[in-house]
Amino acid sequence: MAISKKMEKAINGQINAEMYSSYLYLSMAADLNNKALAGFSNWMKIQAQEELYHAMKLYDFVLERGGSVTLDTIEAPQTEWKSPLAIFQAAYKHELLVTSLINKLMDLAIKEKDHATNNFLQWYVKEQVEEEASADEIVQKIKLIGSQGNGIFMLDKEMAARPPLFTFPVSGE
Ligand code: OFO
Image 1: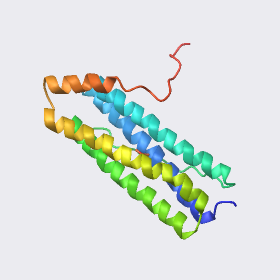
Image 2: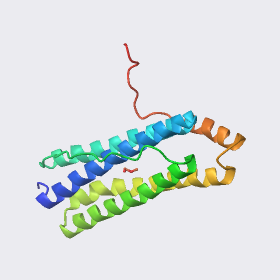
Image 3: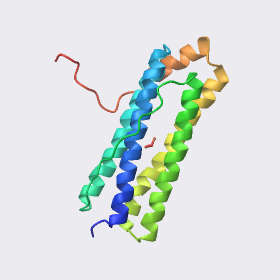
């Protein structure tokens, strides 16, 4: 059964929200890099890849269900934050917003008795639990060690170890 027009519109909106999340985290990664925190920047850059993956899963789902993908303008994200703590607090807050968007999508799937979309969205419901927890964990760690000194240096090294979801070819190759 093809996806309803209402659900198609709602999922297209979520594709845009996930693309914005990717943009936002990429902007945060750049600011973290400028703050001489290459490891934090690495973590956030990979987070931006995760968001792209979230968007692409939705994209493929709409097409698989016989719907149309309509890409809209992606809002420009903030470019500077006052500290690494402010960045991760903003990321956590953003994840709470995304959770509420996923919940609204799920509400619509339930209302429409669209079991296929409901089943598909379960993955996002679970993913949001992890996304909230990982952003909050970093907020709590920064609070514990403070924004300066050895602790932040150690945490930066830890964050540098997060492996990428995918890699790009080295430029010039
Ligand atoms: Fe960070 O979960 Fe998608 O947006």
